[in-house]
Length: 214
Image (cartoon, rainbow, N blue to C red):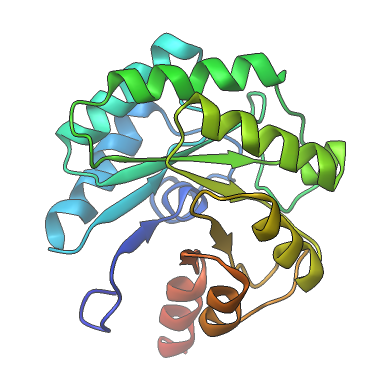
């Protein structure tokens, strides 16, 4: 990723679970495992590394420890989602999300716990699939007020939704371009024009490496 010229590297939660433990993306890795695996990546590159921290591995106090441990391992940021545990991939059915107040508490705890003011806290909301588009927007505003540096709206379902979400939020936004997702596959240029500042391609490297090994 670094040699290809990207500005940062994203460490996929599904990627860690699938490629290292051979388990599905349903929150089966522990905090210790994620910190160790993500730390290997962060220390192998000079560009910032951001990791999927799932639900923060518990309540607000667990989230605080998650932030401190990831900082110590050399990570530049993480995203924390509003799903209930056990979580699922954001583009699969069967998800459930926590109350708004619980997720706000997670974000507040994360913001207070970090020692490096540049450590990026990204709040991911899976509410689009469960509460509708307006519910996702409402939650995103609350997460920004709680201290999130950026918002990750998971599983938006059309180009129009990506556009409208960006119009509703003033905070930096992250778009997830996964090849098997519910939404359209848009280019970095298209997303930038819509107002997105971070774009992740969480499974692309796996697909390329598998193709190269054929």
